[in-house]
Length: 323
Image 1 (cartoon, rainbow, N blue to C red):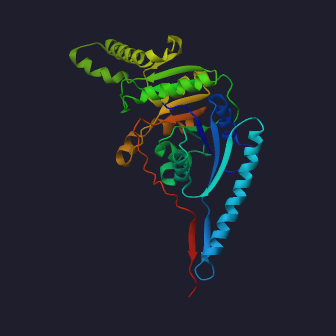
Image 2: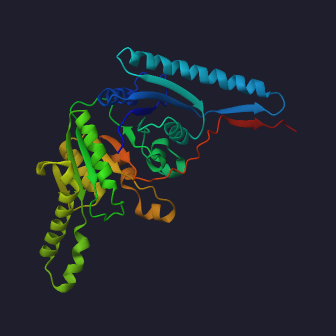
Image 3: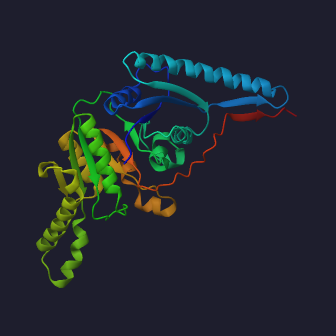
């Protein structure tokens, strides 16, 4: 897991009175000694008359709009610089927003993307193309989705692992989750906990040999505990901060996060497509609405983004003359 040296903040509205993603990114920048880029993707459409709009005029409109956003971002950056932060600002014509953010993060070699969670519930989010949802699916860079406005203060960090790989997670993903969670908890002087959800019914095949139900459950719990011990051994997490639950991962993470009053949950995400995505789903995406804390999502090593690298530029809609 590389060190966090560059943080990209996706700023939806540079004129907003409250910018919790910016505030938390600056807090992280101080903790990690990192630099920050404030980025806004201009995705509005330009409606052009097919006859009366020249190329020069289109470029002028694009330039004026970009300058206005840059000025707003620079005002935010200037306030941060007064507190010693290294902050730059960028605004580019590009769409859709989530692709623009990923492109900029890759171009800047960012180690972390910070964005605010989309307001409202994520019903049919994949069909609507909601930016935070798509960032979780498509970004090869770890994504921190900010759900709480208040700054971190000795936060409780909860890492969700799957050492038995019962839910189709790659074997090395747990190590990445733990490394990133530990890095955040240490930098912010917080406490690191880990949760592992196992399926007690996976051992039910033992019942066919005559084993009692209680023995089956005990065998499943013992196997899960041994797997968790192996997974966290190098992270030196004390037993009191290890949480083993015989439940579905979503229910287990929600339950433990509520009990601990977690400030940040760290999860791995495996982006899927097609019918497999519809039937299996994705734990991180399903927890997006339900978790009461911020969400930090990491992809497995070698994850390849399907986002094209070149910017799309302005979205130009040509108005046809009436007949």
